[in-house]
Length: 89
Length: 105
Image 1 (tube, one colour):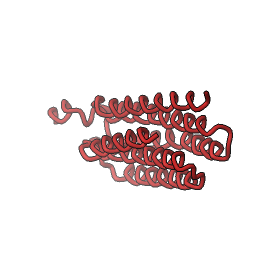
Image 2: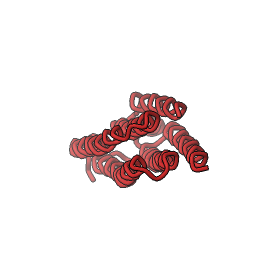
Image 3: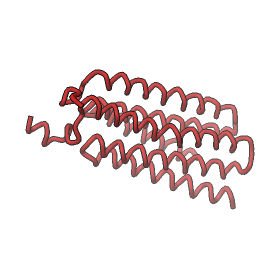
């Protein structure tokens, strides 16, 4: 089961590379939302290895708050007119 | 037998996630990237969680895992939609971040 843990950490590093080199700000946001999904899976793996069911509550709370954070960042960015068309749409 | 089945599904989930990561780098445009990454990532997470639930059989642990799966199934596509919508509203065109478009500018 540790292989799942290390696989998720490797994928997390790969998504961090995408967050760093992402050309537009939305690639960075996409990378961040994927990283939060990976962290949820890492919490589930740790909870499964140590057979502690209260750890899953952390995963639930993190799932809700992580996504809500990304949603509000995206809503904030949509008002900043960052795109090439300067938000003519 | 159940644990053995759970392990197979977990390996399947990891393969999905590796494809997602590979797709994230191979695709040149943001909109295709978000389509592939969020979809494959959701499927990967759901299959991983089902695999872990199978490993733990019918228990309190699995019920919490099922709740996490439901939350992720709802929230992941939602976030992908909001991201693509905010990119579209603030004028990020389809071919905006490809090398050709920068050269054309």
